[in-house]
Length: 231
Image (cartoon, rainbow, N blue to C red; front, top):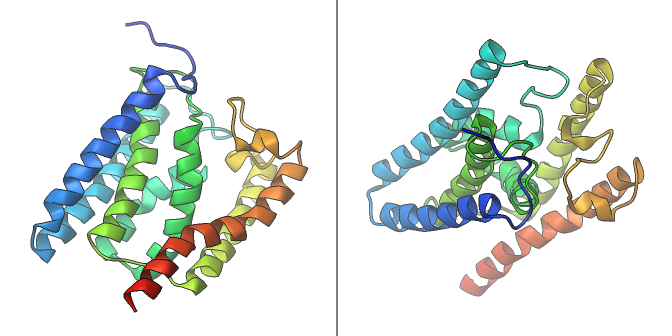
């Protein structure tokens, strides 16, 4: 079967997975809300195991059967890294992990959903990996909010921001040692993204840093107003 080329913004390959994920997430959440707590926890756990397991299988397959390139293929992009270890959160349900992941997933993963960076489209393995990672993470964080009733605090904004800075510092070292471009710290992605509106390197990195806390605050505001309304 012939594989399509890079997935284009607004194409059928772009919009169909999003529509399916929205429908399935709504159905899953509605079903889970009517279940006992133990069942809710099991569903949450298996969501994470599925996403992390798929990521592990994908990378093992790439290592074994494809031309695996450590300068580009390691699961170090933020969404890939989260997906590989998201089972830790869904299994433990630790609140401090929720505080960190909420902002990373809503801001970072949503960007990947809106402007996909997929070199080879349907039905390539990477096409399915990309959507399971990004849409799976959004489903998991939505489930934690609606079903498990997890809500961030104001300090969660700064906690998430600080941990992200540590992760970016580690990636800068990895990029330097491998001459790589993980998390696009050295060069913008080939496909269009919001980074295109923020100037050339290194200015787009500086501008992203300046925008992160305000963006995280915007994500936090609905939770703040809902809490205030209830009180």
